[in-house]
Length: 104
Image (cartoon, rainbow, N blue to C red; front, side, top):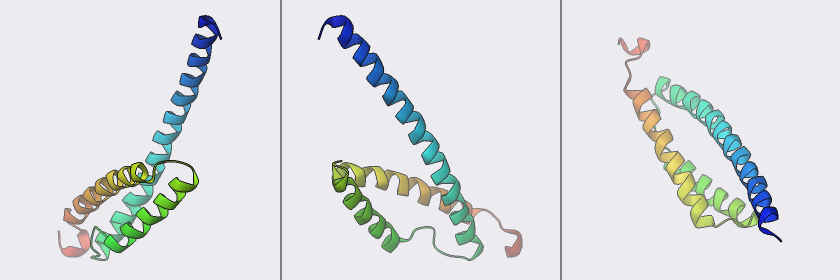
């Protein structure tokens, strides 16, 4: 493969990476829209912001999916833990807001 062909292949691969990054951002935005609703529901019903049992189940599930997809399960776990930490932070912030039904 010549240099010009290699550069064209590189541009093509980078274009695909850019498209995948855009898709990931949109998927994460949709995920956080759902978790925002979960946080509102938890706060309205005085449920804890974190659910360690569910988180453990999700991590185990994602590790299996990652292994099936030939993605490093440890990386997938780190990625999910990062997302979970952000979701719990959002849920705590929602829970800390005054709620009309609490006299606030």
